[in-house]
Image (cartoon, rainbow, N blue to C red; front, side):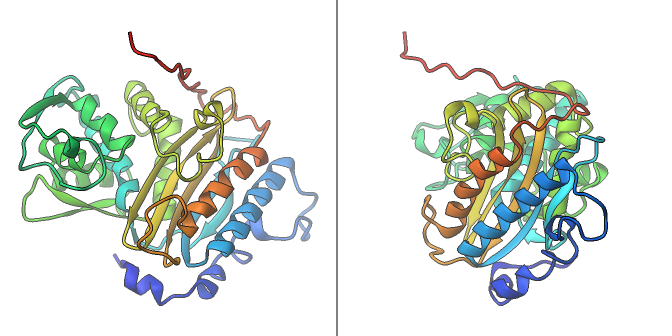
Length: 338
């Protein structure tokens, strides 16, 4: 399995990357009536999504590895909108926390783990100065449920939660589960300690297909599917990218997970229509943009995704998906304590 690291990607160049798939191997980039009859409404939506992606990623520059699709009104198979370097193996960083959660929940589905079992948080397992909340506690050991671990993993992207998952699902077992589910390139990277790992690699296509399997109900049980999607759609899930310029109700229609390290800024997820049906799947891996030390919302790739988000919503406005189950988000109700 070949791997493109960040230094290799920097040498590719955005101009070379842009020509790999866009406008050649992807229907979405073809002329609407290029000898194939009138363009369907679904195809027009896919073309619109492709145009939005092309515009914003060009502004941001750098290298992109992307797979986007929209629901088809004629059947369960979504229409590809963008396939740019979809099979290039890249470091997925925290986007692979979805895959980690999938493996842990698979063990829950098989009765090997339970969400209410407790996991001990020791001072030696805490990742200092990283993302998340466990490193802020300042009081160890503590004990939390596995459900709490997964919630922290998927919403605030807690780094210590990765290690806590490794206590119940070691790296070798985790990779075996993902291979068995059909994702041989979506793998964590083992280290000397069998219960620890780097978050590893994936491709845009495999991450897209994993998200599709999730909403189709073929990845996990119905209970685990709803649990995972609830975390990714939570108000405290990542809001700097696709969900930034949206109302709270619109954010509730987006299930998303971001990942960042070095000069890479990734995000992948699903957009649901108001009825709760998934209508757009996006995987946006990006690296090589300017300002690599900026991990905030003003990084070029993050700004590009923030512009894409509302435009994607508009592009799929009114689109139905009767072939997949509808899952309405929980209503967001702020609390004032008490």
